[in-house]
Image (tube, rainbow, N blue to C red; front, side, top):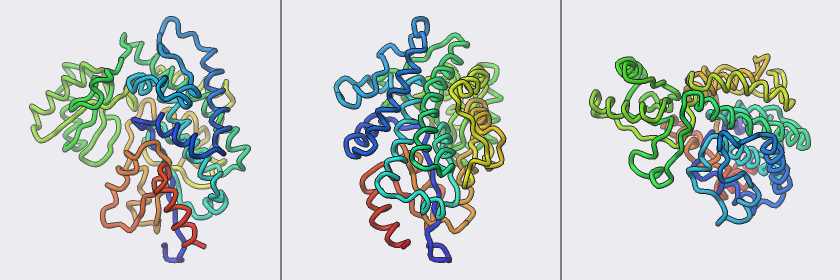
Length: 380
């Protein structure tokens, strides 16, 4: 506990998750109270889907039948399809915001959470869920705003994929390669054992051959970079020739986020959000929310949607800046992670060696047990 004996909580949401559809299905089946919201969100997705003409783009070649995929696992498309931007953007958001709402429905008092929470953030696209959580709305209003966010994410996924089409490519992941050593060729790749200065130098040296952009600093020696698939493959081999201690692999993404490749999405997605009626300002936040790109407090933003879209679409991000209060020693005792997946929870833990901070994964039964049966009773 903190010096006053009370828990101090940090809330975080992921922006990725390889098996998010399995997590969503498990949540739906194990938490009946969340089922009406998931039905409503799936209906919002379907409504937006009917307004998009996919005849030319072919983004939705296997459809978008969320409730059927939940009810009939054998009818679920493969991972390569589900990890494409038009699918993953709306469905990862649905998974994470549903997890958060279900924890409140299970008995986590939102007023208690607000009074004990220091601040919040979200990895990549997870930042919107963090913003919505930080508004501390009554349940009905929370779900109303969350559903507007659901509509926005449908179009954001589409606009991001359209951005890549402007470069003459529509990357398709190879399902048979996703779990292999180098991964399936994609628009983003992870690099280990390399710092920012070294990465910048290598990108500059490689610039005669292709464009590669630093996209997300996971750790000081771990990066995600973005670019066209063939350039990333060449850059990986180039980097290993220059720095043999480095290693890399593709991560499954059909878009090059956090870099100028998504300029078209930045021009169009804010307009989609306005049309949908999603407009948020910093004075609506009850706790600080730390932004992707530079870790500033979005409570000071005049236009949160514009700021978070700019950070996600075109600016490199640094996780260390987003979780700076954890690293700085601000009496935070617990991190509540709402997923999806466990990757970002593990990433946060890797920044906290020697610190007495517990990361609770609210996406799994053990995490909920720790929250409801250990943390809450100890705090009362």
